[in-house]
Length: 158
Image (cartoon, rainbow, N blue to C red; front, side):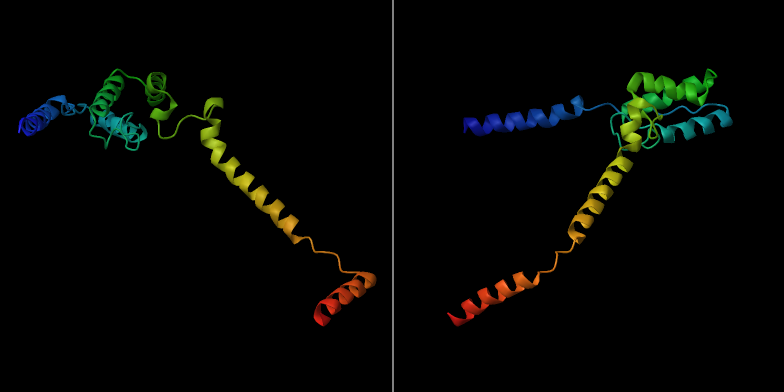
């Protein structure tokens, strides 16, 4: 009985403590007052990956860090920074992966050209196998045919 009471108390504690440990909801977004700047910010939101969700843009992500990134982008736009300066700052902070289309440079060659290299390598392997398989066997000589006929005739007579 004591064990059941302890389990019940642990379950009750876990169910009441879980909401306290959860991430608080992000503050609501505060759009820029200039409609052109806000449109520019929203266009940038679609190009920036949420560093928590990793499969959503910061425009679609409900994560708190995405809200923070949206606020950061708006602040930098209001400060007069260009889109490239904003992206460079995000890359500096979070790495190339923060952008859905990272810049092409030596460090991202595998990301950009790896799939093409893999497909080309698979094509080369397929072509080489097809060539190797396509070689026909040489026909038997008259002497080899005679020997084969003798061997098969001995098996049929036995």
